[in-house]
Length: 342
Image (cartoon, rainbow, N blue to C red; front, side, top):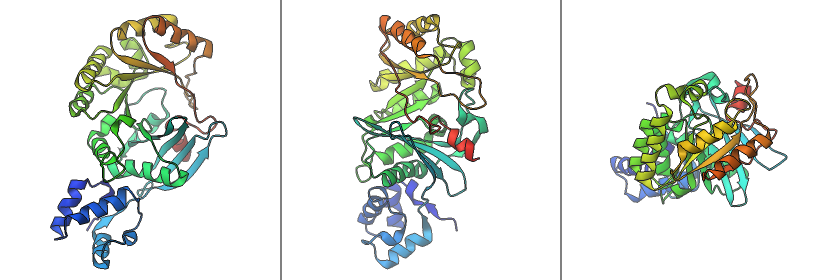
């Protein structure tokens, strides 16, 4: 009999399981806390359970822990990149970033990605499979354990498209914020998407309170389709309309990610078109000097051009910043470390 992935089970599912086993309801609370507050790796560690109940857990449930396969630390800013091994011999990446306001963890939501964005290392091998909620939580727990740091915010911006794994991602968010577990407010969570407009609408209806970051990267459909094949289905007008709907449903300002690529999308004309596209929309533009990926032809824009682009947006009343580059020297772009090890 295949064991149940207990780390992916919600509080309600554990309550139902304990009732099925004729155990008292408080056993579900105890088990949830051992898993999601104390982050145990073995049922033998549960001192509040009888030996018989621990044995029953061992026979029927599995704690699928992640294993650190490689760890790289930037000499410039203490950013840490983890390559985690999964139980099926696949690999994922997680990045721990230290800021003055706290420690942020960028997690993966899939093994690989099927979105096919032209400049992204994650897309080169295609999609292998979705991550479970437990594997997403495991990245938070193992990174905190190894670094001995409190994770104060989580960004779903590693390998994979979070909204392409909608069910597991929303389960992860429910469990991450549960008061008997990590109890992290979803206002400290950002979810980055390449623009699945139908799923953005669905996410908005849940009113979770998280920050939505939308990868835009171009201002015309032809240019965006060349960079991001998802634009063939959800073009810019549809995407921006979905984002406006998300704001109306949640009241949460959207962040638009715009990766600046030399001689492709970084001209003054591009900046003017972007400002016109977003005029009157409560949003923020995060300008990203693109991370070069080995084997791909895209180069990051020179900093003077980045600053001109920023100034054009600001003159047109668009709130914008240039993202601080972290993780120098450790293959910080999503998918680079996994690609080296495949």
